[in-house]
Amino acid sequence: MIKLLVYLAVVLALILVFQLIRIYQLSAELKGKHVGKADDSNNRSQGLLMLLFAFAFFACLIWLLFDVRGKMLPPAASDVGETSDNVFLFNWVIIFIVFFITTFLLFYFGFRYKKQKNTKAYFYPHNDKLELIWTVVPSIALAVIIIYGLSLWAKMTGTPDPKAMVIQLYAKQFDWTVRYAGDDNVLGKTDYRLIDDASNNTVGMDSTDASGWDDIMVKGEFHIPVNTPIVFKCNAREVMHGAYFPHFREQINCVPGITTDMHFTATITTDSMRKITHDTAFDYILLCNRVCGSGHYNMPMKVVVDSPDEFKKWMAKQHPFFTHLYDMHHKQAVATAMK
Image (cartoon, rainbow, N blue to C red):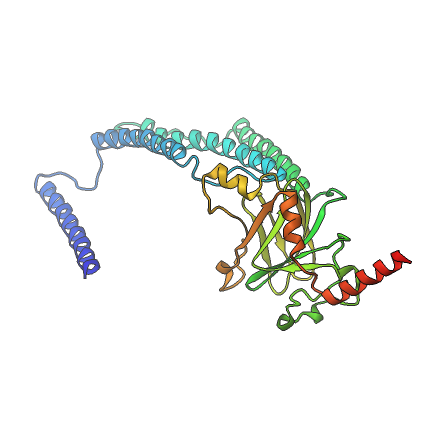
């Protein structure tokens, strides 16, 4: 009922404003004024208002920038993230410089070149030097931005540390499966024909490949150790997904049929970030940033960055997917070593 009354009040207010404007127009016409035709006085006032609006707009924008400080993402929590933040900052500096200059000129021209009586527009159709400047300068700026961005891309997807921990991120509608490569740090082979959600073999692991017997699969949340290089092997089952770590400033597409790689080293544990943000409920997350279907919103996965000792304790509680094969292989290895 309250909403209906509010809607009615808004409608009545609009009708009132319309009628007042109409009354003003009729009274002006009765006085012999040309309603809708601007004179020099109108042009001067409108030009001045445009200039004043520009300053008010910039003042509000600057206030907003200071107001949202500290309300965005916390500090980057990875080695790649620091470079990523610098690239974004570099882009924002260029954008704001160009934005302030062009926006000011937009409103200033409205003030400076307002129509006046007995004035005529100057016909200025062509200037080679001017066209060269606004073609070359943006081209140089874009080249610098692209080269700087490629350095970030190379750092994120280039050759990783040979000793980096290998983890698979497997996306499907609408959740993630994380697979650790185990003691040998080698992911076992998979085959889409072996996928069986009923038996939790969501990635199609092949039991005939001994390198996969020690692989560990987890859902819901996964842990990584701090200050340890990690390579993520990213895959998708049916549609494209996006593996996005906002706090580590990394993202890459997960594409069906191929494997995409990215790597980083987490530099701040979850406990430390909670102290930095003064938020005891803070958690790192893995998101899908591709609209992959109706359940896209339901794909956040908790990520925990542990100290090395805490990570070892957590891993000790996990079990290989092919536990029986792993145990059998382990017993045979022990027996062989004792002979």
